[in-house]
Length: 528
Image (cartoon, rainbow, N blue to C red; front, side, top):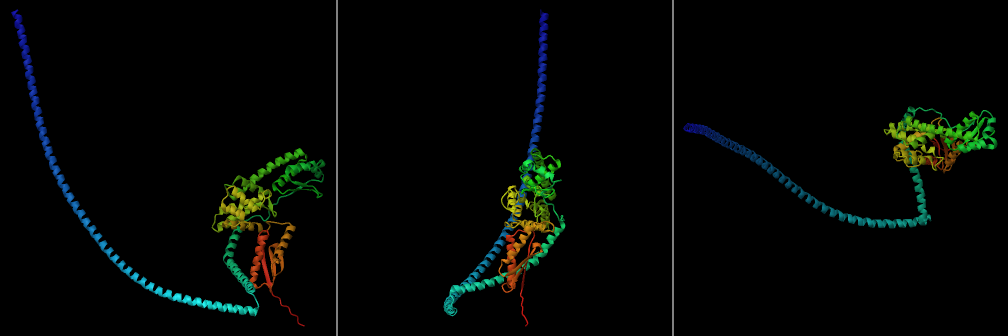
């Protein structure tokens, strides 16, 4: 028991000792740690105080530097302000001098104006007195004129109206002479300044464009191998010829002329369809109403295709783009249209080329002139279907299908029917005259040719003082002989111009007509 108690006590003492040792170790460790922490705190405090001292020193240095810079900047601004103030004061002093000078000038002008006003008042009074004297003198002159008129009426036994008529007649005669002189002088001046240049431009255009002198015309006759074929064309009781005329819309003339059947129609397309259809029927030999309808329908398609191709080819040859399809078709129709024996499509191509050349020589747009020249006779494609002249019809078509204003005016005015609003109208008119009047371009029937010559002579003879008139050079010139007693040299120019103007207004002709007026005085005496 005692031994166990002793052992238990010993264990308790050992545990207590161990516990006490642990406490001592912990205390030592805690002390050491606290000591070290206090040392670090003191060191950190010292470093903080050193940094604060350094920051204060740096702040004082920055403040001092800023104060120095501020003083320097203030001094600079002060100097600049002083300089600007001095400059402003100099400007004000100069402006004061200018104002003072202007005041002096204004005073001088006021003085001058006062002087002028006094002079004007004096002049106005003098003018009023002169006006009063002029009125009195005018009254006296009117009285004298009235007395002289009364005396003249007593001496001449004429009324005022009769005297006025005599004076007006004399004045009119004098004016005619002066007008003739003016016309003659202006014509000579225009010839001197424009004739050479115009001739050069036209000659250059003609030389650059070389075309054939002959053109094809539409053929309206069909050759047949024998007179027996005429009977087959007519058919039993005329049924074949009636069916053919009904299908084509033309007249077929079968007469006694050997080897020929005539196709007549105002529409060139129908006439061409009829001509080709009749030729194919004669070659085929089978001529009856059913076959006629088949051949005519086939030929219409063929001609329509050719019309389209001819229009497109014309556009390619003329280098024109953007033309409406309807206008292209109408151009193709011109391939089958003739005027005075001249193929209208070829004529239009000539006018297009010539218009371009003339426009380029004058420094204008050749493309516009070429387009206007190609379309100038487009109205002839439908002038047998639409009422009106071909320039009016053509202008309406061009306007309808979106052509520009210059082209519309050129198409409508190339014969002078409407007022020309652009130089392209004159260019197209000149090119049209060149193409129509060149040798071999056109031909006329004998009857129309004779009528034109008679009309020329009639127009010339209708003027007062004309004794004789002769159309010469195939109607290209009219020779007019006037009375030397009724028409003097000065009035001759006016009469010639009046005749030319009336020919332009009343006649249609290709090219131009020269009016030559001859005035001579013949004195005849007989020696007996």
